[in-house]
Length: 206
Image (cartoon, rainbow, N blue to C red):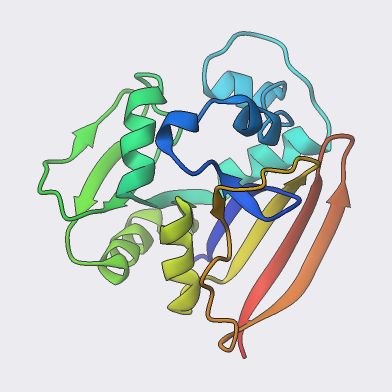
């Protein structure tokens, strides 16, 4: 049985998930947005940042998100930024399908991540990711424009937001341009931790 299609992101209180330009990634605001995840044991182990780290519900959520994911899809903008920042052993450890116009052979990394470059749209990328994921879920990794394309196409089953106590003021909004006339949400759960509030919604057609 095919798994769900989902995304999971950190978001500021004013609705932004990333700064406006790639040059601002790893800047102060972005680091504040992601502050909750850096100390976690699973995150540190997955990126090989050393032993130790915090456990607890935040750590469980990050581990569960990783374990449910059988394949990922991302846009070219996210890939271009990540190609510069990810370690040699990229943190996905599954197939990743990059939606792009660029013609490129698959890029295999140590640790089980292979990037496949898909030139004929989000539907084909999702079909290939579903096939690769088997009975596990497909994660739409980002960035914001790619998430929105999948939401507006009615292809997202569920999403989770880690709502951080940070204000951006400008940048990439998660739902900028959403076709709200077509999207209805059902809250699945909400959990508060010392650093963020985790909310999960099932997506229905309105």
